[in-house]
Image 1 (tube, one colour):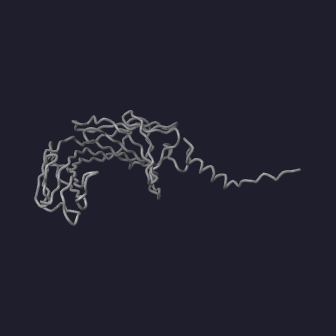
Image 2 (cartoon, one colour):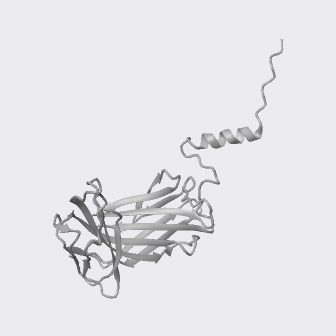
Length: 256
């Protein structure tokens, strides 16, 4: 007795199963969903934050002209390192991938911020130098925990100043605190060491205004190209590093 003939699986269905399996098999990469460092037009963006304690780096890799606008994972065998520390790949809820490094902040007192980024796979091994002026500083006013009325003017001060440049101030509700402010305010200020928040520039976000913990953050930001220190660069010329040296403190925002 001859049994039933085995059912044929169409190539289309088989390809679909392969792609589905690739979504969960470790190390399996579909060539269209990952970026190879040998591609000619990859746009690499590095975001580097210094807060005086930790230096956090987050890198994105995108294809120029990709309408999806999502940053991609590198293909199997590729790696990114920042100052000799291997970056960890993280998938965001949006579907984008980033590469992250968290290390001690070695630029606490430095004038220049300097890092090395190394991108490597079987065909490419390039080290990029990131160097920019984003000097460290300290907030001298207000004091941490100080009570500041929204209806009155109050001073912001920091040192040392950097005349001829700008500094960005952001004020909003403290993370995990009781919310009482309306939209955050972001001010681009002359980096002269002192500024003033005008009366009622901070708005209450509640019908019955209350006191709450708020955060003041000052940031010195520099944007610089990625320049190849060793190896032949293949990334897009618009690849950049955005470096932010910032300090913050919490204060009490009050209605009176």
